[in-house]
Length: 250
Ligand code: GDP
Image (cartoon, rainbow, N blue to C red; front, top):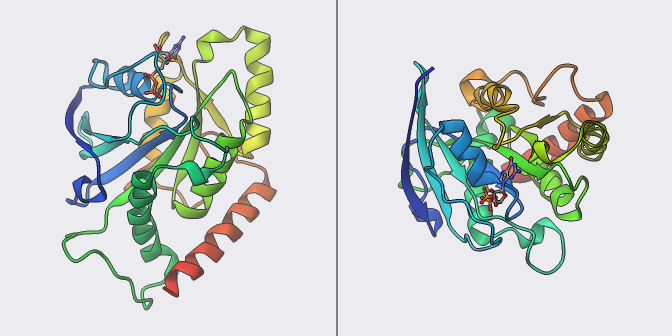
């Protein structure tokens, strides 16, 4: 399958984010978790700058991708979190919050019903169709910042999923333990990937396809069968419903 991918720009403010209404998949994760490496591995070329020194990027890097005969969409590499004080999603960059505020607006259309008044920025032609992929380091399951980020995404983003990076660094027994713990902590299936060996990349493309609005199954999205435990679905659904009704009142 051909993959056409170009770097569009680095966005420092919400105003620099895409405005053409194409689908967007945002990559979220701690600094150094391997977001740039995953992007490069997915598009099979060194488009994104990788770095051994964590915590430098304060910009959202935007890539436009066309895969095979598919529709174009954006991969958006959001600023990494995890190197500020504390350990909750409060440390998300302002840019990340602004980014997902647009997601919230898109999510509202489906969640609040067609009679609910929805407002968009006046210069935004179409509401963007957005989704989030949380990347967590397979070697460090259950970090407070990752848990908080996932909880925040479940409340604020219409479609999201989790993948575990650097799986090549774990021996067989360790990876089984780590994945089990990750799935238990995040209460959803977690896809193991490696930018170094290429493991999991085909499945990650499939997951990205499923995150795109035109391909989404009824929420909540799970990244593999079997589906997540029922308790997860119910809780996630309740959280989304309550955040949707909160949003629709604004
Ligand atoms: P970002 O800050 O999240 O964009 O992280 P980078 O993609 O820059 O990666 C941070 C460091 O982890 C770099 O030294 C990468 O070479 C390394 N890295 C990223 N992905 C993998 C992986 O799948 N396996 C291994 N072994 N190292 C990785």
